[in-house]
Length: 422
Image (tube, rainbow, N blue to C red; front, side, top):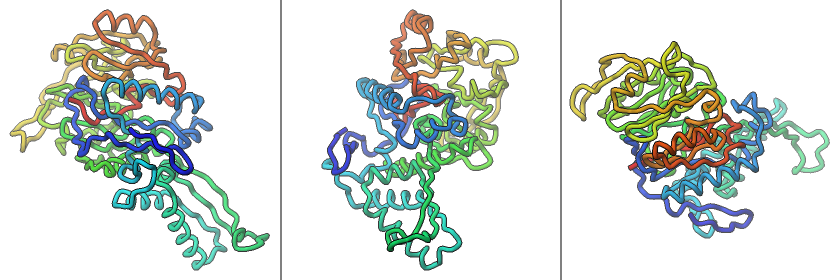
């Protein structure tokens, strides 16, 4: 990753991105080779200013969140992963190593995306001719902006309300404008807009309206990288990335509060998981504190996992619908073959369970990111006891401070999307 000094700011230019990227994630414990992140920036600030509209848990310091995110990225890069930030993906092929724009298809697409992201709203007194002139001026403005600024526009989605200025002195003050934004506040949680299966990438569909623009942003960023998704979940189906975990010859697909039967059914119908068994983990609890599968369960290796103790037995333990592919690898359908409890299914797959407490769950104990089998980056506030239990089982568990970032309601697993594992 080259860092060069542009005319007005420092610009990060992705120079080590493997091209072409062939997304594949056959198992959660594979070596993380290419990881998508999104460092929180100005778009996140607006969510912090009013957390109850942004699906954030509590206010946090954006400067500290940026620093925590930088440490997380460096840790992944030290482990040999190629990390691509969403802004780097949006501007891929648009910035030379000297920081100057590169004319071409990627920059043209980015300009059109930015143009569509900036919306003018006109007072009735603004004439058709004036509107035409203002729209043309907007296009001229977009043409003059650096690609890094265009990426900001995509994530900020500014809205400019324009009305006549009765006190205008000349053409430069003939209008009065009010500025607002409709930002992608949660974009740094890169897990949830998509999933990566052994066959490639599927764009999901968020339950919350405030987050659905993230699906669009990620799909466009992937296009800039030359990646075409296998499928995109269609309304009214809902599917979020925190509910999916691949595990070799089977996958775990959560279904509950934020990923519904329709969304999961679309993925089964379009065979995006590949020729593997699909275990649909149906959450009977369906509450926000354990909103996704990865908030109460995680894999550590092919034979070891962690599970919140409130999900073992009783009426809060998920039921698993097991689907198997029937036919050939080229032509098959998934068929429901049986139903069992979640813990029973894990035992049948030879996976031993380490339990953790509800208090540890609330401190993001299971929301770590595996960088390879038995090696993870987790949240330090999960506690010493949790760390000791993992290390006693031979897990290389490294814990970082995510005190600011977790204010947005998620840990390192939520903040990352591994698109290549091997």
